[in-house]
Image (cartoon, rainbow, N blue to C red; front, side, top):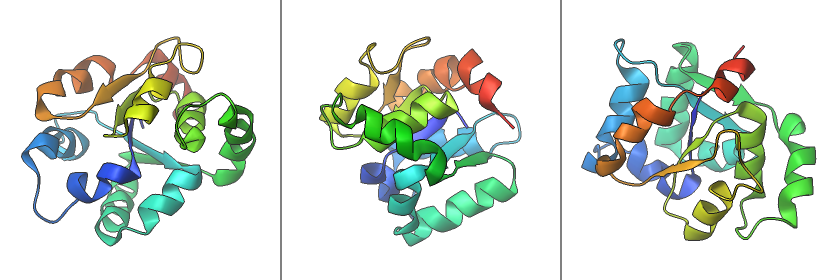
Length: 153
């Protein structure tokens, strides 16, 4: 539940041919030796649902207890509140992080990076960005935080 994958990378992260930069994420989410969880919800769930391979992979993660779905009605009000505060056009991703406690984002969207690491939007703990396999250490360090543990169901 502690990693959010932005729609702009979903086809690479969940793609049929596994991209080397995202192999650590898939291993973290699927390996029985690891404790990775994906959080999906709100408008991001709608975006990811449009990508067939992502939709199927996320469904399998949910069945395995490795993904958590946050309903859109839960994120809607926070998304509206954050809309005027965000530089990016993704306040729904920031709302999802705030509500779920996830503090790790996989994305190539620079404006979303600035929002996700902005302490005025996400703090306690702050957000971190995964872009390449060089960021694999972030899965261990920030994949699970106190905030995400408190919000697990």
